Length: 261
Image (cartoon, rainbow, N blue to C red; front, side, top):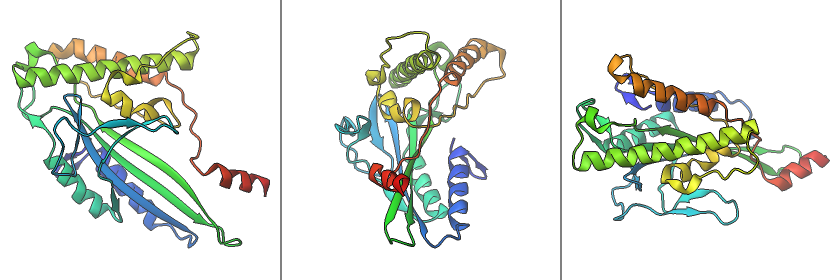
């Protein structure tokens, strides 16, 4: 997702494209604001990768009483004005990530990483001078791969990390299955189990809310990983069945006034 050196990943490419579009904007009545945050979910605890001081037990995940979605309390959100600034912050966050060596991977990610980019378009009405804001949130998630203890040779802390990775991936799989059943209309009463893990809480809006979701599955060509490859493809196939209807996020009053005009 992030990549190494010149081999850039999806996150840097997305951010670069975003700022190229901003720079090419020629409309004087339109301006943009971008904020960046980066966190990791390690052993079901949230760590802010842009902050050196993380409380013991991790940051708290709260639920917004009005909007209903979950958010991370006291997470550092940094305003950025160019791709170079995002690159600098990304390097800072990547250096703080929890990685360790296993029998299968020398730099195995031991946590799920979530990069959140909030992109606001502020449009000024040249006649009235009033401003309207359209807001979008991009969650770019680097999921740690599921692990088998016998393949990775995990013991002690590595084994505990692997168990927590598998737990949150199973919870995500259950959420994807429930959302797929909702989209297909196969069952009438379905409760989507977002609360089963920290990962699914934070991705509630990205998976089943007002969003468009893309999942990229990484497969191994080795025959010894045949079972993992098959389960990964089943996982991705379930995600493909989710159907969301994305609408533009804007102030309801502004929308009403525009429609009345």
